[in-house]
Image (cartoon, rainbow, N blue to C red; front, side, top):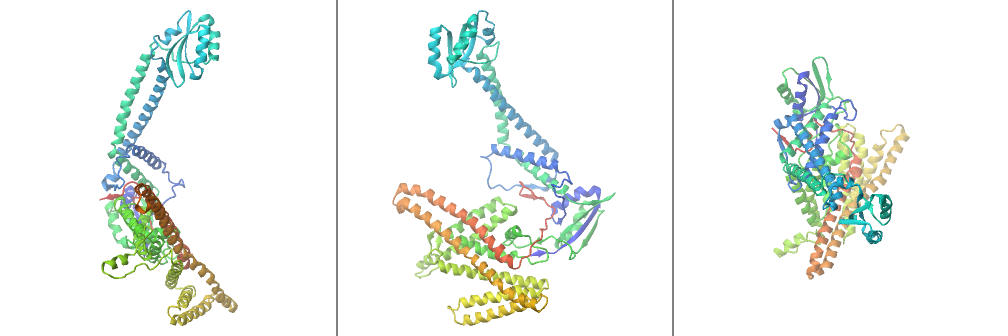
Length: 640
């Protein structure tokens, strides 16, 4: 239902502003207008930067703690801990970022050191230093390599030309060698050697042997690896640090929310204008008094010109379905909350579209456990609960359809066999009795539309527009009832007469009342008869309910097909290897059908509410009552 709210003005001294906002955020009962964070009116770049840095640090830490993370994790923090310790957590963030920087530096340095080692490693057994080779007076020494595919050519030429060389090792580059040349013939011979595959290497000029050079570099790498392992161990075991960073991120989100609150001020005071539920208006004084004794509160009932926020309060079953309505449009403050009625219809239609006992049990199990242990928040949490609740109607529909993971399933028949009775629970068969299922779907659509029209009448009466309620609501209720009774005359002949009477009453009421608001006689006549063209719209609406049949049929056929394929592979249980192979077909096929069924049922159930149901009475155009509160990303609950 839509709860009553009133305007509130809170005036406190400037020095009490931050504490008041923090207290109101904790209590979450007052809605205060906010600046658009992208408008630039309030600079929240500092909060955004810290949030971004913290999220990035948490993401990196998470990559080290994948094995230690729990999927079902419910995070709580005490209020005193949440509102304090910001500076300490900022220091922690800086420290962790420094460790990441150090880790990256050490890793990068190791790569560079290893690259230097790889360059000289083939010459690790060289007896001389490169400095000694460079200082030779009569002989020039050249270090390089010859690719494997040129090695034979190089050796043949060297033997013929009398070129001296020593081979020191091989690598992916080829054969690494040291070439001896007379200084007088150096330039000429180098050119010739390069023609036959020799590649000169530019290696560092050192006063130590390569073996010593490699040892020093390896020592640097080993020392770096020790530090890297220490940092990695810290990251892997950083459970407490991880929790502190999550608190910091949510602290910054809360701080950003407070900073965006719109307020007025004078020399001494700050003034907040907002909205509060009538239910909590009486307790606001005590809340403000905890902050300061110097305050002023003013309450005022909304006028007809105020754009009042919509505060929805429903039971545990209806509340999750509010997200379905809000996705379409939030109810406005002055209309009827459609969620209590819509939720029941959505629940029923969703189950009829899934229509399988096995899938319904999966929904109860999967989404029930997810809700119990993960406790998802926001719209996602509401969607999970919708799927959980709809598991019940999916089971009921599966019993009526006689389907358990696509296998024939007569529950009452099984129970009846125990007591020696011939019972049957299969009343609808979308696959074998398609026409019966289509009639049932359209009949259900008639009831759905009549419910919407009843809502139209109630809303019109509430808005003191009885004529519209009669013309657009009551008249079509009679028409739909009349047509339905006439169509069902084969069941009871009396229904034909009653149906004709209802149809005539509906048409007369429509013609008379539809044109009452028009000016002039002709306007009233044309307005009245023009209302009859709505028949085409209602015909289209009723045909839309055939999607209930379509989804139930497609889900059943796919489930049956997967069972058939798996049965062919396993030889109906006679082939052991086939049984092993068929298991992935069973599981994969039904998981695919289950996922697609959920998506399709969600989309098409919503579509029937939006275009067929809400189109008859719903106005929308409101905005939600969203009090100043802690909208946490990581913390599930802030306790006292």
